[in-house]
Amino acid sequence: MSQNGDTGSRLSLPVKQSPAEKRQLKLELEIPYAELEAEYLRVRGEVAQDISLPGFRKGRVPLATLEKRYRESLRAQAIESILPKAYEQALKDNDIKAYGRG
Image 1 (tube, rainbow, N blue to C red):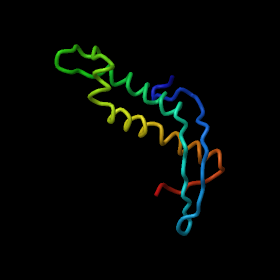
Image 2: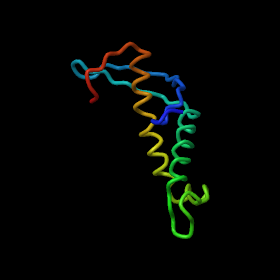
Image 3: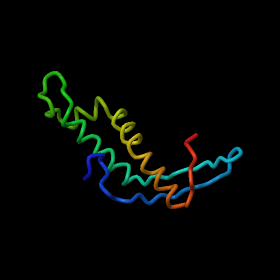
């Protein structure tokens, strides 16, 4: 695994394209559950190593406690982490040249 968390795996994404305003294209990506779950587990593992809660040593918080307190935050981090990779892959797979993000 590289330092940026990329496992080198290629996302396989269904992409729906629809025209928007002038020179714009709306992309809808479907990220497979397995890919999102893998990213969630990666993020959870990173957070588990670094988190410190009262009553637990750093990196020794039980996963059940971590998930109970921070599940939504972990999900949000996983989504924020996987979206740029998915976006770049969708552009590449569909031969789209982006001038910027809207």
